[in-house]
Figure 1 (cartoon, rainbow, N blue to C red):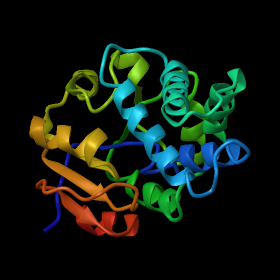
Figure 2: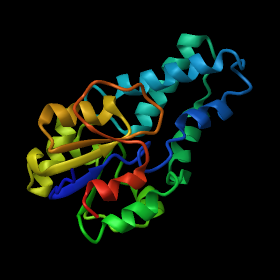
Figure 3: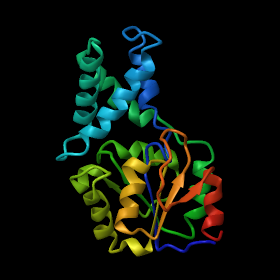
Length: 220
């Protein structure tokens, strides 16, 4: 059955843009972390990034810096001052997942598209430019003064749009950062776009194995 939301909001990194923080860290630390230890090192880095966004807001550079410092300390790996800078400055170079641009361009004439991203005002424009499609609005954690998965980030978006959860579709590849909160807030159509980078969870979401299935879900 198709859905007819007033707005469609998207997570950006991981869902639309291929989030290459792990591969970037792997390349950066290849001379300091043994191949057999790398998967656990990267898993720690991912876990610490989530932990770092759950408290009071701080700039995303600080999130990256604290996360990689904590990861290195936990694994007994030397951490260089340049590591956080290299990881942070890689973000604008990452590109969309296959078929993403075409799907967004197909949907944009019919529905206002919105981005809600754990990003910064000066960091997000390059990524949005890679997506090419016109967006009605782009909101960042910096503007919301909170990162997802905190409800405050979603509430900021709703306030700015003059909308409420019952008329919103929110699309993400992440249960932890997006869809759990969207479900808790009562979003009309929380939608998982499978990217394979998180375990599944038992939440009432629409599940798409391919972003190319999204137009049909919207009756297009």
